[in-house]
Length: 221
Image (cartoon, rainbow, N blue to C red; front, top):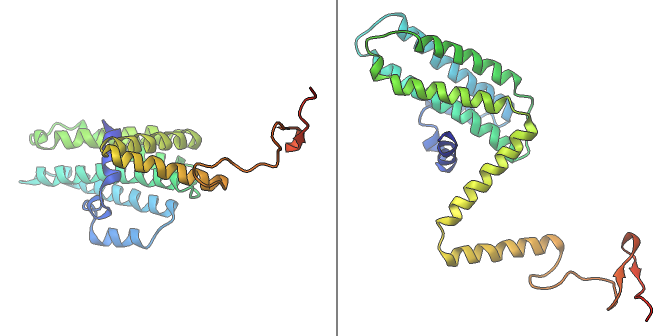
């Protein structure tokens, strides 16, 4: 389920993905492009939301359930943004350090949310679903970020393949055919060969490549 959510988020415009952030937070992210510092910003935003939740639960106020619900949704979206940024850094082969620090901070956030979940509150029904989503998202994110980066890279590649296949299924047969031709053209360019032509060779008819690519004389009859 969460995999489908992340695929959907990856297709959304950047502005739509950032509705859960304040204009000031969006500006802070705009000024920081490196993966490590961006992750720290997102973690700080998540901590601020959880701190706000603790304040809301410190005393019962009329109408607080709506604020609790919305803040929990923001926590969920920020954690999903962290995962998307990590995947994007891997996809673009950007230097990324070990995620031990990210995992540690996420576990601290999870512990605070679990303490909130253990509270019996009269207005709990109004934010129950948002709370469950935030907990599930954090647990899934921790599990992914505890992976070896090589395993995470393979996971990202699998997601990319699934997303690409899903997009192609929505294409018309004509568009899929055009895409296949484009792939063949790109592959041919990589090999330095015009589409539809064989790769040039120095071998004469009947010769086979020998050691180190040297022509090998044809067998005697």
